[in-house]
Amino acid sequence: MRETYRLAPPVVLWWVWLAFVAANVTDWAVQGTSAGLALTVGAIMLAVTGAVYALALRPRVVADEEGITVLNPFRDHRVPWTAVRDVYTAEWVLVRAAGAAGDKTICCWALYVSARSRRAANAPPWKSRAMFRLRGVATEPGSGISPRLPQQAQYLASLPPAKAIAARLGSRAEKARARDGSAGAIVTVSWAWFPIAAVAVPAVALVMVLLVA
Image (cartoon, rainbow, N blue to C red; front, side, top):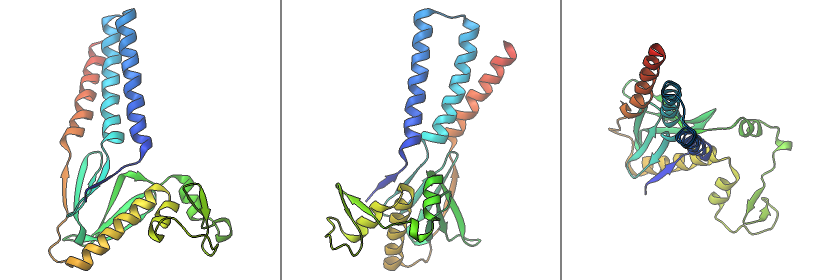
């Protein structure tokens, strides 16, 4: 089963930025503007668009039958399930994987843990209540109220999004290791040339425009 994981705010940022660019281009077309100003501001917008694409829209984590693919802004990591040693959270979701030179930790850029979630995780027990809200019904362990979802689903529903994703990935990795062992698993890393070009080419063009202007 193929699953793609990313958080909503970066995707919303991408579309908000595109709407901003479209509104400005429309305004230029209707009201008119000098060629020099349009070229300079257009080059700036193009450079920012490349950066927003690489940093916000592109990052994601894809899990399939073979393993995890971590797409970060400029590098891709392919981790077979049997190479996954642990999936946990700090500021981001982190995948600890076996490598030829020992274990390595891969940061999942797309799956960040908000400061609020980190504070909640570090709160004293008396401030943290195991409260689930499922379909408008709140249940607590020992409350005598029958949950409507399986226990694992309840647990995932109670977690912040990034932590729930980490738990889901860790569970899939454990099942794969139990089934297939961990021999012969190889982690591969490659550069992502398209987002590199999407950032570098507009940046070079912007420098040239500023030098000529």
